[in-house]
Image 1 (cartoon, rainbow, N blue to C red):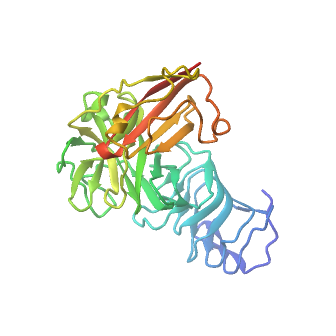
Image 2: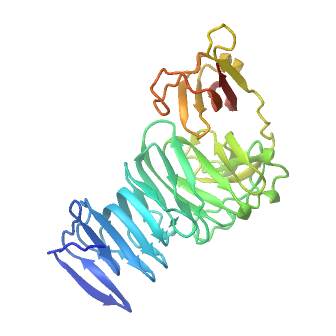
Length: 379
């Protein structure tokens, strides 16, 4: 990577055996510029108006510390033994995980890897992720690339309304006895509809809005320790006021006893900051309501008619194509979908969708439940 000439208050120093670049002035990467860090960065000056590319490259470990938080436009991380943060960092456009993990101190949750409003990332995997706290800033939906030392264990958050800031970290720990968090979360104190709670792992999600999450289980989740079949599995949250575990409901579920994913219903993030898997006393039943729509205007199967809509006029319908892209979204659905797209994702709005199989999810808010199934569109 090319280094820009920098005429600023910078100097290198040696701390122990590790060299450090010490920014004491106003470091800035201009448009189309680039700078590579092959040592620690001590940021005690301004370094937050960057337009170019920064990279951290080292065969061992590297750290970012100092009194000021650097904000990078584009950032590459290629640090074999991890990039350790002693001060938070911001990403404005793109973070590329080439090799190695960004590690934040879990004992200081305010030190985060922040993905700002337009920021995205790539290259995430078990060996390249955020081990500690990541934050989304002024976003409405985000997949946190978090995990522990061994694995990537992402959490996707979708907010009901406004874009906010939220932080998330994953803990491969027993919630009864966290190693770092001050509180413990007794898995024997259960609210209504909860029979058991995982003692293998949990996510710490902090925010102030209403949202829903998608989390995944794998072989380390050992869900067979507390459920006998997949229909019993649910997402549970620790109620900070009542100090007990509550069932957060299921909007979608896919997988088997070894691997899978699950989407919760909407809940208040401020009330339920600790999330994991649990066992529901009223298992999710397989949903068998599948529908056919024809596009010939013959008066038969012209519309998607979901009877429960009459009982819950306050609802949200989403229809997805086979690639998981939403092709139709309607709040307060009134049984008037006739096969036309309204999201401008797959084709222009108000055009007939291609013939084929689709997946739908409807949240019935008045009934405090959700429904899902398949929809086939034919001529």
